[in-house]
Amino acid sequence: MSQKILLETIGTIEKKEMLGPVGYKELVLEAFQPFPGYNGTTVPDKVSPNALFAITRSKYTEEKIIRVIQKIKNSQNFTFDATPGLVTLYNMLNPCIRFKDLRSYDEMPAILKAFEDEGIEFMSNRKIEPFSGIIKVKKYFLVEVLSDYLFKDVEVPFMYYFAIPVQLRFNQFEKITVELKHNMEEPNFDVALGTIYRKLGLIDVIRVYDEKCSPEKLEMIRTKYLQAIDNLIK
Image (tube, rainbow, N blue to C red):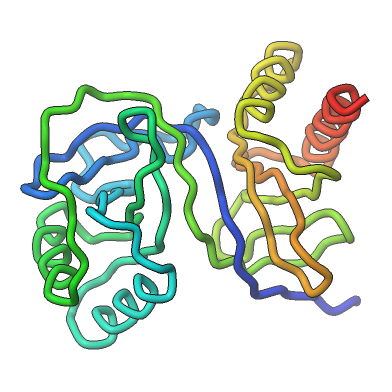
């Protein structure tokens, strides 16, 4: 039996989601559906949020945000995961901190206060109607290397990443995805654009989430994206 090859690295994930304010005194947006392209299990009347995006007043360095996250998690009794990111608001990319894996909505004010005590300032809440916005976050990957171009997420079930040969702008990726799904018999899967750092440089990837994804379906999705990208760059 061949030994699994695991890769721990960093990169980014970029996607579009429906967002809306939660109701704290700080401006915090919630992603209503974590995998909008996948129509799987939904959890109505949930007590814990899927993902929250706290908009900061300034763009802090990634190192500062990460060090503050680490300090708060090590010194206080909070359960959460967080990472620096960007979110579209008022047609501009605004700096934010993405929070997930919280135990409840009620913990968020105390967590934000802890960040403010460390010098991180957040925008004040305001009336915003739900909107579709682009989100780009720093991601810490732990993946199994299945091949030179295919990776399986070790921490999140049913999630895969495959390499693509060029960097796509998000509008290009979105256009390809809409056209591709429109012409597929099984379009029930969610995708996002991403990057993964490797020793030789940056790899552009597409992330696939599908709770019923077979190896054959995954390869079919990959093939269709590669064909669409080839047609785009010709």
